[in-house]
Length: 137
Image 1 (cartoon, helix red, strand yellow):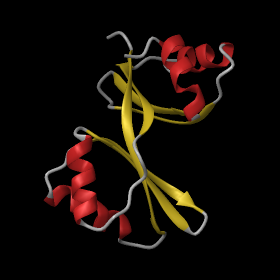
Image 2: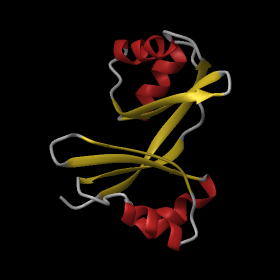
Image 3: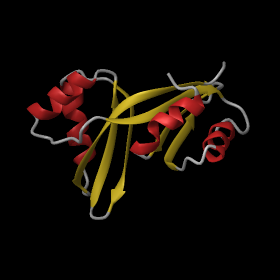
């Protein structure tokens, strides 16, 4: 399987860093039948930052607004999918580095069945250039 890199929209939400917050927010999306391509969360100071990559951005924003949750404006993340192999992410990172683009963050995981996926963030000012050098659709 050849690697596929595409731009995707994501939204961030900051919540109190306390037990149950993730479940509370994800329940809003479950109840609204909003499907996610990816979700990641991590502590940020005394809060938790949640990043959502929804299949349908409009449905996501509507569900969050209805629940009174204020999410960021639409932002761009790169979604990478391909065949799992040693060094799978190296080419992407090497390409960015040679183009002078710093990766802000990256999360990658395998499915245990020969495939991997990753989320790659770069600064907003570098999105266009990163898309070009990575051949992202």
